[in-house]
Image (cartoon, rainbow, N blue to C red; front, side, top):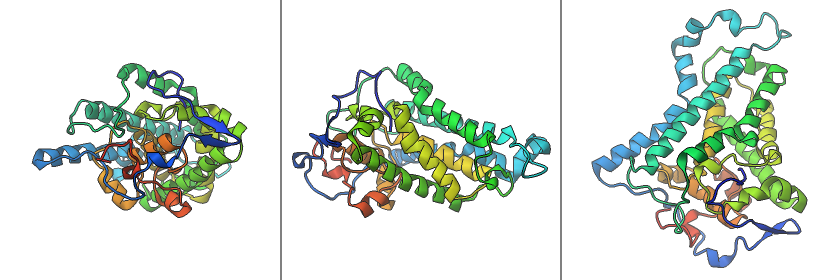
Length: 334
């Protein structure tokens, strides 16, 4: 998600007529309806090691909650009164909120470091997803813009602070006991992506006015880069991220560590799927139905396919999935 106003790499704005985009999803852009190749191809032992090193980014995304839950480190670092309530009616402790926000920041650090290394060729020669090539931009300037956008991490942080401190989350979220429940992490990711898929389609289809003022500016980027992920309107963030987040929290009940792990994976995965380059893990991701940057580029390029972000399951069920290998203007490696 996101909109672009600052980057010189943005493409022409999408045109909308009666709630539907024009000049998008046309057949000349498609050469087939199947295909599963994804990601840069690395050969030899060095290439294999490079791809394994790149994949460690996923460990980095959850490193913060993993550290504190290993042997209950948090109990040795923080006084018990900082994270336990004497009664359910007590005000929420701020420690859980602070740790959750820091977890996302730590994950974002690893994403940015990974992308900087990837662009520099540390994991093999980076492969642009689209044949036109990757957008050219000043890394530091775009990174700072990405981190400071009020409709991005600032609004997301405000939502998390408000729902946490106003005790709007289910009671289980304020519990520090039990460590990370990976099944519930997966459930949160699946539910969030499913609801986001529906909200995304509604933004495109339900009303030209809603689309125009919430999501349309995002589609100025027909060849997005990683720092376009949260460059969006307030309305877009609320409709496509915050509402699904609140629904997910009330559908899947979990503890603070599970929520923290889900939050870091979700926010940083959204960033990664906007990358201008294919990731070393994309081929494996496509095999199991995980969303890739190439999958999301299909949506940016054609507008009417691939509404989901983290998984391809919902688009496949809804008949809206289009493989990157089916798009003529994309490289053969995807």
